[in-house]
Length: 453
Image (tube, rainbow, N blue to C red):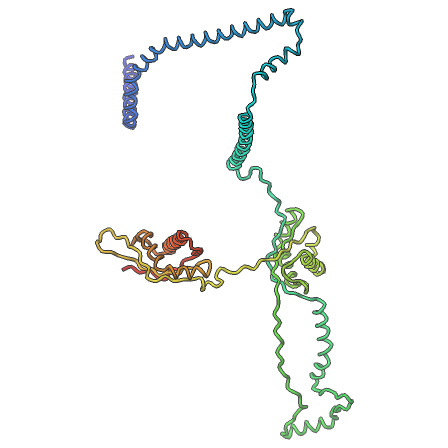
């Protein structure tokens, strides 16, 4: 038994030691202000208890007054109701005229009320203003509440997702083609040049109009020529006129830029067509080959679009490889593609070069002034901006020197470092232009070189 008691004492001592250790650790981790607050609360707690005890009788008096006032008004209401009930049961009420009794308060009020036109008009206008303002404020509060609900709602809430049923074929620059003229030209070429070509192949000269052409040499002459060739004589054939080179006149071809899409009934059909790469290739090839009718001109109207669609369907329905396309129901969506000028269009006329722009260099352990010299080219959004920057060249350099922070020597001049410098220069020049109300803007900055002195 003593052995078990020793084990129990050892366990209790261990638990007490562990508890005290944890308590000391928590005490060490507890901030000092929390301990100070605890001590101040312990000091102020008796004072608060005494104040609450002293306020107890005052609270009782206030409660008794509230209960007495309520009971007083309840007795008053009961007395008024009791008197009103006794009056309704009396003979005076039964004999009196009920209409006069009801109208009597209104007549008394009317006799006491005197109308003042100024005060009445002000009161009416104030009431209408209050009602109108309340209506406007209520409406605006509803709009704000709806806007807050829309902002807090998820992106997919109350959003109708349209089914993707459109296949974008791409943009095309189509030529004007006349199919009747093309077939006639091919037939005419085949009939007009066939006979001369056959005659030229046999070496025969063209026949004269009177029919007196040279006859073919007799066989004997042919043997004679052969004997002459064997003896070393020169054999010459019939003389032919040299072909003359006649350059074809250059015809400038007008291209019609179009963006063409196919709209199907549902997304299943659309996906089956969009995943068929061979079919899409054949459609694009057919559209480029067919072109647009000869009488189409820009800008396109509804009749021009209908004519283009009709021409496509007439030509494409004949193709066996496009049979799968016309087994589905679809509609054409044809729009004129806008030809935009590229970003580099006349860029050289919108560029101005700043030379010898000096910026400060940040060196902490030196007493000498160090500078960084930068030469860069700015590209404005219009050609007027070049003249503005040229006129304000010195002012812009001074603004950059005063507003750009000193450059840190450790700034790496890789792509990211150069981009940081370009963006800073662009930002400060645009700030200068905006501050002086100059109607231009710098689109890009190109650094030529950076040199530190």
